[in-house]
Length: 363
Image 1: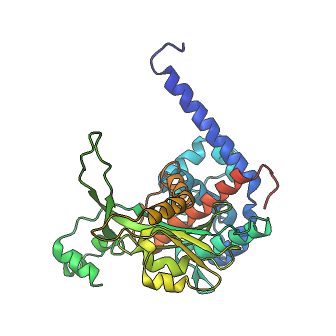
Image 2 (image 1 turned 60 degrees about the vertical axis):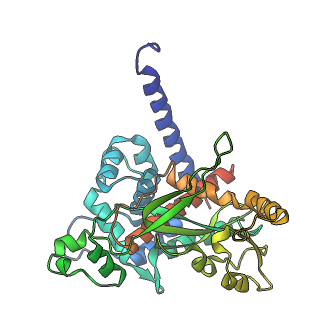
Image 3 (image 1 turned 180 degrees about the vertical axis):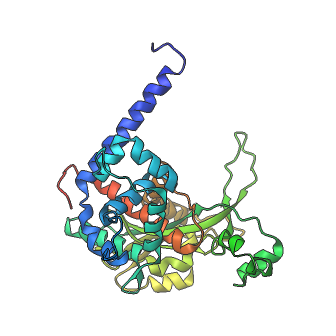
């Protein structure tokens, strides 16, 4: 049997599905999802059913559905199908074989309500993230060791617009041709932006220099700050992809971190940021830039190298989100993108805690 074509691939796939099922069980054991209930009920209120109708799905159940969807980068339709298809998904949600499964429209409606909701003047997803952060601190996962700041581009479906339409969007106007076509306007993302990502080409084997690459990208940015000790996301914000990384640094500083060091790459090196980090409670460990037209001084190169060994930890977060989680913005608008990215950041912290602790007691 093992020698038959395709048998090994099927066996490996079964092992992979089994591993994901085990991961969901461990995640369910470590995280007490009930801690989100109060905020979810405030964010997505339900009717009193005085006029009858089908009972609404439980708030925590629907939040688990969104976490499950984020973990596997699934569409609403695919989420509905896989919940019905996989016993591991049903066990994670606490559903039995005879229980009703939320359909794609129900999932979309709940996520939209969560996106529109504001609690205490903040988006609901930020409040949910803060709720879990509070639970982490109470469980002993305090922010310590300093903080590492970075950002990554999260791709979104590319928009095919004319030069005139692009100009109108950048200036905050709705293109004339779209104004009279509501259906078309709903399908146009006017918040996402194009940017260019540069990559340094390594010299060839014979020592000849190669041309650096400029890669265009469209979407949003996930700006995060993690603590050095645990590697947990402590602060985050979402912007369009064209927003300069350095301009967001003050929003990402965590004043609760027990250490003063702040690590970041050269994109964050500016007079404004250095002035901001001159605070007695903060200490800049931001990479220094190479002098224009001059070789990098050896002492600065060595210092940057030491900083890189610390700063590299934040890249593991993005690798996890873009790799196994497959983070991608399928929705339209920055409000929905913020909810999607916020869910990904919450999920990363959940999985990180599951990895950090060997205990199964809920937090």
